Amino acid sequence: MSEENLEVLRSFYAAMEKWLGSMGSHPGEQLEQSPELEEVFDHLDPDVEWDWALTPETFRGRDRLLQAVADWLQTVTDWRVEPEDLIDVSRNRVLVTVRVTAQGKGSGAPAIQSVFSVNTVRDGKITRIEDYTDKNEALEAAGLRE
Image (cartoon, rainbow, N blue to C red; front, side, top):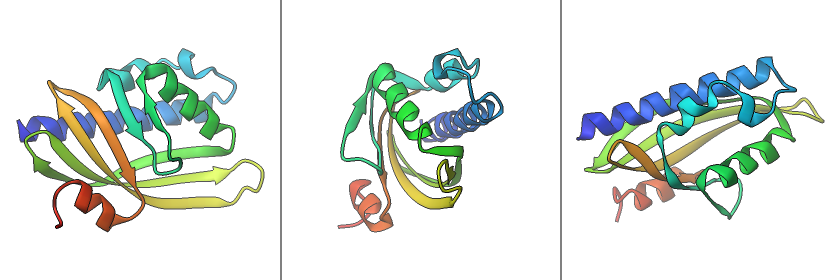
């Protein structure tokens, strides 16, 4: 099961990168019209919950996730998410270190942030994503620190 979960996360981030890249090449395109979008959601449970590091809000389900992405894309361009390290934490959890890069739309300033993402996988789908900007908090949430 562990290797399967790691593969789910690898495939998810590859799909995200492909989707975000396609939006960069077609900036006027609606999020829902991007052909790569379904590949991203194929990895997510329909009721997925995502706790973004950038906001205290938890986004649930497809519509809320798409709204969060749309809101974020109003402030940045060239948004990229690159997994750097995946750690199998338990039977259904994977900790992923992600390098997030973007460029401010107004300022043009580059932004680079490491995000530590604790992912819950069940039946081959991601059911919950908890993002942290502090590695120690992520390790604790993943059960790797007391």
